[in-house]
Length: 427
Image 1 (tube, rainbow, N blue to C red):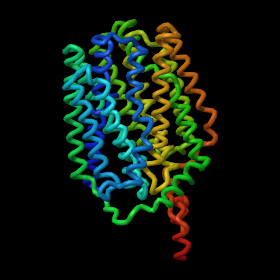
Image 2: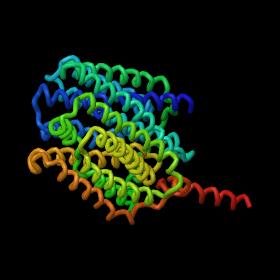
Image 3: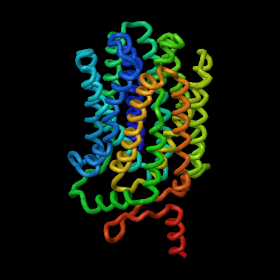
Image 4: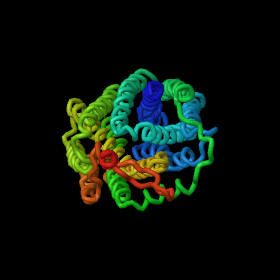
């Protein structure tokens, strides 16, 4: 477990630096705005293309669960995905604008696949000890601590270097972190080698039972509705730059404050997870998400922007971990990467649509009226409340574990009921 924990830390530090949402985000937007003269809709469209690999995460999960590489479900795949992501940003550093889109898409493919595999690996390693939700909270702490430092650095690069040079510097730093994580994957991931061919029937039955589960359908609908709210991330950057005339350094610091808020949210939910059921947590994020969005109507000064970004980051982090927790509640053993990949792909597919719609509405429909976009986004978030009553009521201590039955099917039995049955049999 010590090696796994060491790898876990290294992997999520690399994720916090290497994803295009982190160190690359501001240099990329800065380059597109200043060097390529793109508007908000065009930048949002570019970012939507980078989100496409995140919408097909289930493909990576199928590869890991159904087709082990050299007898391993995770070790080789994780190392390869980190390597692919690093090659993408190295192409950007080497070729610049001519390879910007292919390089960033390659990075996104590697990062999306790696995230899917890491989620599945955590569920595989920790579900039997009922620690996976707390591991996801710890993951968020590590990710956003490294992301906070990365965003601060991104703001410094954009304020001190020309757009092309800032993009190149960020790309090289990302590649270094990702190559280190690729090496760590080979050295630190330990898993038993599969010597027998995978029984496809058992895997198919586990997936079918999950996909026809009412709880999984309810969780999937909730995740889709939550993610579809028109995003104001890219319009916010344009609003801060063009309307409020904030400097690039200040915008970078606001991004870091958002990451600090996410870190605070991860620490908060780490203590909160065992106190409330999954449904209570979902009810809370709908209320807080709607409120945090509406507060952006008060945006006007650097101080208000700082407070809003910190609070938004905290709420977004709590919401993300609640959604991941809901996904793990309905994930069967033996198909961890597939079902987690499917639900997270749905999350990212709807987020992609959200980014595109938000940028389009801001630039072409709302005529850059930021407040109207805020009202629309808040309304969509509040609409998620319609499916709350169908979500699972599960608490951490009641987390269900799928076990194989005699006919090869997976049956879900709660840990607490299993312990009671064991005690009864002893009596």
